[in-house]
Structure formats: C-alpha cells, structure tokens
Length: 101
Image (cartoon, rainbow, N blue to C red; front, top):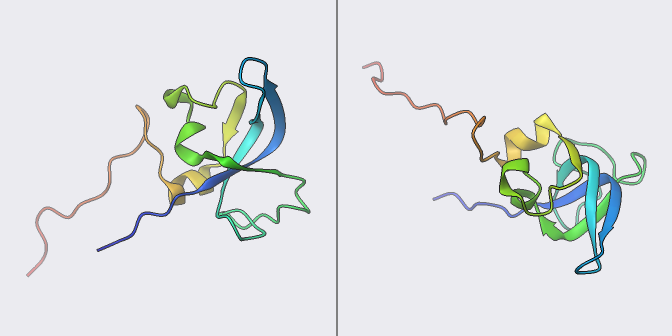
C-alpha cells in the first residue's frame, strides 16, 4: 500500500490576494516537502531564491484547479511528474495489460 505524500509549493514570485489578504505563489512553481531545503526536482530553495508557501498544496496550483493558480506561469515538469498532475493534459498511468509469462 503506497502512501500519497502531500506536497506544498515553492515559487519564484508571490502576490497577495486583496480579498482574503493571503500570500499566493506566482511565476514558476515547484513541489516542495515541508522540512526539506530543496524542491522535489532537486533545486535548493535558498540558492534558487524560491519562496515557500506551506499553506498552498500542489493540487491548488495546477491551472485546471482554479485554486491558487491565477498567476502561475509554469509548473516544473519534473516536480509535476513526481507530485502528480491532474487535469486534461495529464498522461494516463501506464499499465501492463498482458504481462509476459
């Protein structure tokens, strides 16, 4: 049984929602595990100057979700492959239908 991890977000920019007065990610977005000093794809948070958004989950920044994705310009493809990308352009999971004997 696999345990699905919950990834937070690290981003190259930020903006503040005037209605809720909450800081949200903008620009290029990466998946990040809380307690780690690097993104899922291996970028150092401090050297890459990425801001941490522990209150925003990875699924909220996917453009199809409509959550906190208003100003997200790009999802890191390496992080998306690890953290999972849901949406219309997501690849279906590969399955072997007829295994060799």
